[in-house]
Length: 124
Image (tube, rainbow, N blue to C red; front, side):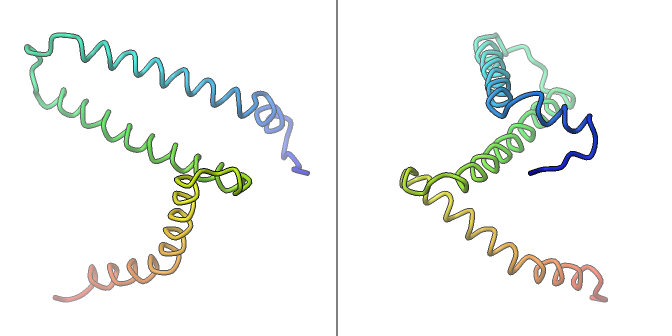
């Protein structure tokens, strides 16, 4: 059983179920998709591709990539707790790939970081 640090943490952790949170996030995603559909249908011929607009588009792109990565992370966490008999072949492959990537990162990342540190501080 999880012991809460204070009443605020208890309230926050129990105020909404995971299903409610996922539903809310899905609604936000649907609203965003609707806005993109509207943007696709608007006339863009006069849009000035100045620094501000390009920066705005780049920011949207970066945030969407980050969002996609975070959704993948949540999906993998949920796949880990599922009965493997109920997973599709693709889900099993994705889970296996995630486990391999974690092992690879845990094994080689310290060496890669150390090598980078050495190269950054060399007198070449």
